[in-house]
Length: 287
Length: 329
Image: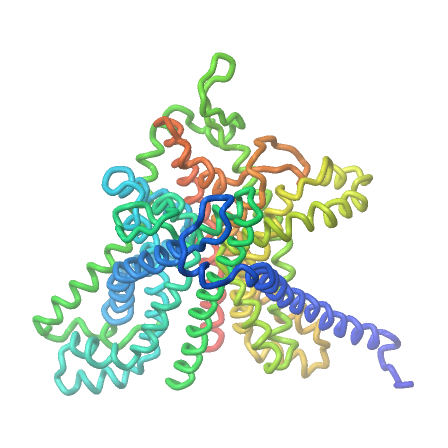
């Protein structure tokens, strides 16, 4: 037996320490298990309905077998592209302002506004875009959906790019300034090219987030069961399709909802995985 | 906050004309962000006006939500059932998620070796990338039957006969109810609380931890006497951000909460609504101006409440970062 100077107390303290390790380990692995359970269910339930038709056909009316969600995939891609086009100048411009030009109260205000915008409930974004655009200008449309997604993307891009721009060493800026280069040229031709992969990563992250948004699209793009290339008309999107199918009473539609979820998670997962991978490599290299 | 050299001493230099144009451009882009935030509040407030004028504070305290005027039931919009649903599900989510997230955060940042801790936190944080509608479909087809068939009967057996707790689990287990809503939300806010807690625990000065270890303290003693007291404010901040996200979450909750009853009762087995799910469900049904206005007012309430928790959370976390900055200097 080991001699205990504290008369039993020592062993108790060690036991409590070990217990705290065990409990936190269990909690951590329970949290990890949750992810595997959810993704596992999506894969198992979704994979059976994936086939060529699923990606190339539009939905068949209930009762007819077959059909796919091609129109929703296309709608998601089109709206994401337009949303990215709208959001990039605002997001990147805001980040450049905060890091390279921002001073004093106004810069603090911009930063605060970015934080507020980033945490807005997404359904509120839907209500806003409905009231601003859908009601009087476009009706339910792909444009309105894109705008809602763009509003969600702007703060994500701004925060991501801000972090990346801060990684650029000041010595680089100072070297260029010392040669008499105007500030804007330093930013556009030196700072931005240096971190371009990082900026693209930030944009990709925002696309990944926006791809899964459902609530704002419900009030703006509305959804569509047919191919529609006209952004001025109601447009389908994968998350909307999943929602509609999931809450429907038909087994066949449920199966398609699972399959769509698998495709959506795959898409978002590839985008976010790439982001994590590049961010790590990027931060590693720049240190 | 670190800024680049420009913003620190840029002002004194004589500017290139291109500089002015470029500075004006990026300032304009960032003004739009500010205008957006103002626009949200103003537009939602304006559209809520008819409802605010007609129902006043009664909107928040009345539990009668009746969009159709009939001879017996007068038109009225009271959001209390929705507010109740939001509060119950968010608080439940917080009660479940905080211990899980905090325990995991402690494990990955203090106890586990980094070859284990890093992948574990990476995997848990991937939960944030799963779209809300995916949680919704999983919740609807997997969690709801599981809650109805297994968890809820079990809870009833365990707690049913205990005086106060029994009321929480009274009634037939539906599966689609407040409890399931809270469980789904807790999974969704888990990564938020985890990653923020992890950052906060990392802020605790090494010297304090090592000092205690040198005195022969055990893991638990370092945790309970050095780390947690120091990080407490920040961890509360992390939980608050989780709460803000839970309050605003829409699709997943909408799909599992039932959306059928506006009854306010003690039982967590009651199908209900949250503010967000009420908007999602009823927005396109609003056929009169006052109905629409009432729904927009729900949006306004959601916007304000979520922002308040968000700001409070950032304040708490910033306090801690400031203190650490000062003590390291």
